[in-house]
Image 1 (cartoon, rainbow, N blue to C red):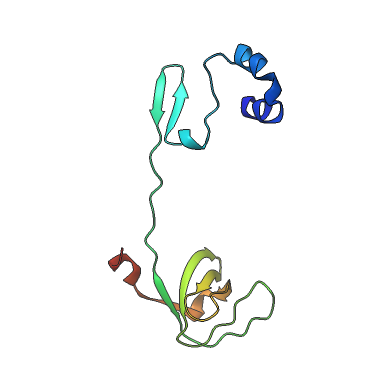
Image 2 (cartoon, rainbow, N blue to C red; image 1 turned 90 degrees about the horizontal axis):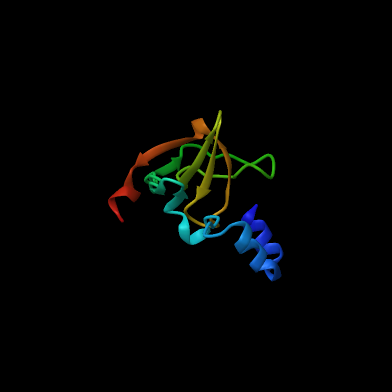
Length: 116
């Protein structure tokens, strides 16, 4: 609430300083610390999942706007698994993204992990 009040009504900063003396809502610069009554808490950084290289095993023709047309051998990066489909992004050509049946793609190598 504090950040909203300060952002929407900056002209009332004296009032906000009286209501919330010395307290401040964490902003973008404070993401690695959370201020509490007993002291600051350090927030752990999210773990990065290494990107993996996939390839299309078969040709697949998109039937809707959500799906992605792929040809056999296209290199893909799988963003998310959604049941029987995967949300994939093409790594060659047009760099489009969309849904592809999960059994149409296969993990090649963890080649992106080799190159930092």
